[in-house]
Length: 289
Image (cartoon, rainbow, N blue to C red; front, top):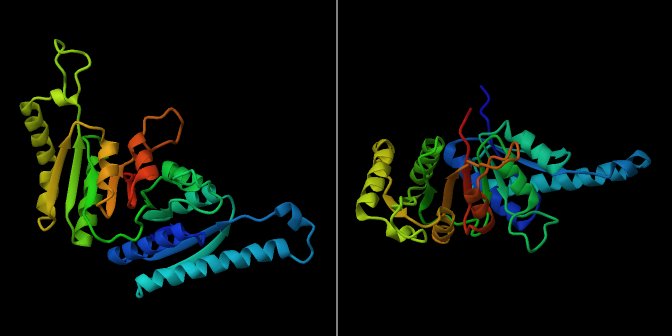
């Protein structure tokens, strides 16, 4: 039975090379094959009238060079890894989204060719991360970081178990600690001023919320007793806490749970903020259907 690979998009940029190295280490850790893909387009209008096939051959040769170089980079960090490289023609977003359906995980760099310097996340990576039907990792910030804890933002939504499974497995595979961050806004009594902030929470409310979180974590701690675990309960916004944690983490894990009005948009504001501002790779977990 064929095993679905980890898929990594390559375009020859430094961001892309960091993504390839991350994907190679992850594939080796999981015992999975790696598929390197580069999506390229060509000027079909000119190609129709070019008898020498320059408009077809040159882009293809460049694409083959990109994927061959990426495959070499992957084997440098994971010598025994099974690597397949495949340049494909088409629109980058559409083709990468089609590729994701055949992989267990898709890995992308944060910004590829043609991006504006002021944009912290390239449009291709953002659109694939937003619309992909499977889990996506965007390698950004300190892309090659291999030290520090895994940090996961966890709530009580239906995706929480998938996030916890991913986070505990990631920490166990890296032999590092795991930090769980839970943000909650305490209920403010009606008699209090409407401007009262989250610091008005009572110690009892915090204890109750912490007890709920510990009960949620208990089965995963039992499954992974060797993973050192820390828990942070905060009244501040989860996105800001996770961005701050990303400066000392090697991976941040969150679920994809958007509430947008655009059909197919499956990434919430927390995920988007991390993809634009995190200082380490960001793992967007999507539940398997």
